Image (cartoon, rainbow, N blue to C red; front, top):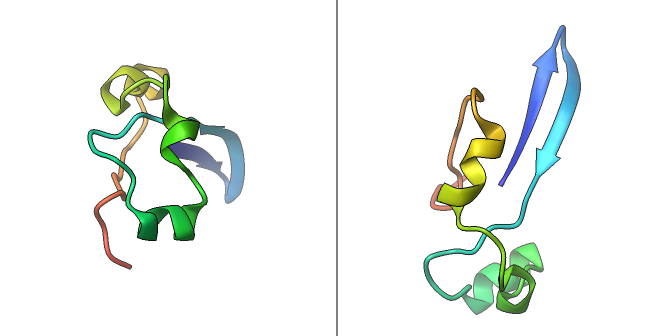
Amino acid sequence: MASVDVVNGQIVNPMSDLTLPDRPISRQAMAVHRITDAMVAGKPTIEEAIPRYHGQCFLRGAQRQF
């Protein structure tokens, strides 16, 4: 997950964390994002990571089509 604040058109306070998904990462997703199951092993779940982003606006994009 990741976030940035935009203040007066400038990106400030970028944050990002790998999180442990609730299912294995598909080969297609690995090919696109270059993130493997081994890379997220031991990482917090999204629910555990969200407090770090407390007060931020969220758009969950993991299941979105662009």
